[in-house]
Length: 553
Image (cartoon, rainbow, N blue to C red; front, side):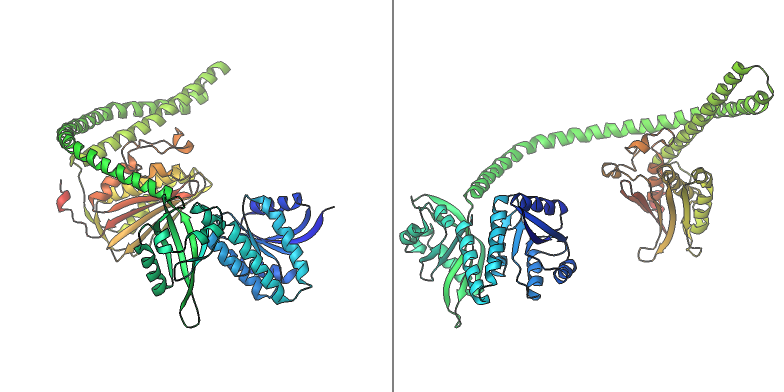
């Protein structure tokens, strides 16, 4: 039959709490339990119910095991307190045990949990029949003994004169002695028998005398057989009432493996330096080759720009005719002829298919027209042939017209709202109003394309510190993957993801690139912050008084 116990679990992970409960049940206990994650929850739980035992994690987001232990002590409750943690190091374990914790168990070492719980429950029952002073002394001695003997790090106490007073088995093993007693008897002069360099202990003692402690002190020491190894010491001095040093106590950790790794890394660095020196001449030669190749690429890029500009101009005239006649045929055939024709069901279906095909031709023709126009804008800007109609304009009016221009796109999405938060008193700035409108429309169109529902907000404000007008276009759309954010403003870049692959919303990949060129022409900046499935916010700045002398066409 299982033994009923009341268990208070101080833990921020419900999975870990359930794992602890599973182990308790396997150990023959029937736990009535409650999990708390904050100091307030712990305090309330201690007020509400009597508990047989507290099992606490050591490191949690809201507080740690020390704080939990302090709350229990403040309420003067005699409840066994066991720390269960996967990050607790021996130094922290010593401190929390000295602070009053009854025991600690490493997560994963569940074999110790049931004996520890059983022992503490038995001791709690026994404490009811003993005086408080007796039980605290017995517990402290037992805890320290268990920690001292079971620690994986070497623990020692030494006298100011240079002899070991007490060491644990791990310390003896570290120095290759059979037992702590053999180590204490074998080393009678720490300065010369332990340390390879005789001034090592002088340095350590000076630090302890002046600062009371030393941390991470590395020393090369002799092992029993005369071989050498490296240890790291964390030590502190224990002083009497008069301020005289009584003894030194601390931890020792074997760092020989780390030292070997450091020596290997140093040698590798030397080899790397030699390789770098050998490669310098070769890299200089290749740099010259790259410079020549870059000049050639610049020439090719100019030829590409000229070619695209020419092709775009040549495409516009026939494309305009094709699109015009397609719309005219659609109007005459689908809206005039087809409704009054009576050619039978088969011919009616064929007529409907013709209308559908004409819709596709018109839709794709309009998309191709936008692509050609984008090509022309981009090639003009890159070639320095764009006509900039710069003039004083009211940002509020320009943004209002831009928002009005995209109203039709937003009315097609009943679950998407366009909000405009633009004050009327923004100061004038020098800009081409058509180009500023083009930037805003590009951003609002993109926001609508990638936001199935929710809202898109167009904001504007004056930044008096930098003397700029800042625009924001915020949406609640699909967001932009991290790997795409750096390339979002490059030519022909398409955002990855299902929404971006939908042919109905896929653009030319030039809109944001053109917007960046326009904004930077005026000395402004554009960037985006985004999180997947949470939305994106584009930030644009236009200087009130841009320096256009270096951008004159």
